Image 1 (cartoon, one colour):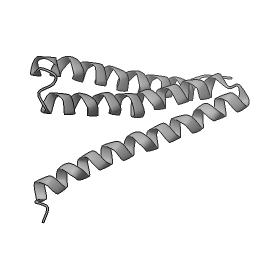
Image 2 (tube, rainbow, N blue to C red):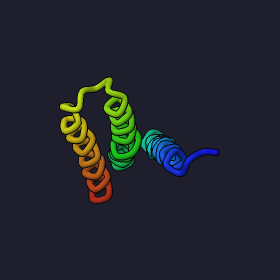
Image 3 (cartoon, rainbow, N blue to C red):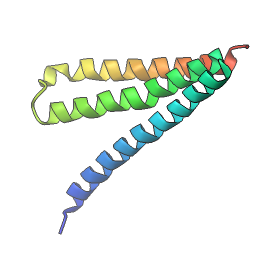
Image 4 (cartoon, rainbow, N blue to C red):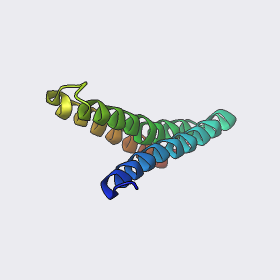
Length: 103
C-alpha cells in the first residue's frame, strides 16, 4: 500500500504537471486567436499566459526536483525563486496590458 505522504507527493506532481498542460493549452488558444485576427491584444494575452503558467511552472518544477535530488546546490534556491517570480510577474503584467490595450 502507498503511504499517505507518498500519495500526497504524487498528487502535487500530478497537479503541477496538469496545470502546466492546461496553461499551455489556454496560451496556445490565445495565440491562435492572435494569428487568426492579427490582434496585438491577443498576442500579449497569449504571451502572458505562457509566461505565467507554462514557463514559470516548468522552471519551478524542474528546479525543485533538481534541488531536492541534490543536482543543483541549495545556494541556487533563491535565484531560482527570483526567476520564477519574475516570470510570473511579467506574465501578469502582459495579461493586464492586454486587457487595457486599445485596438
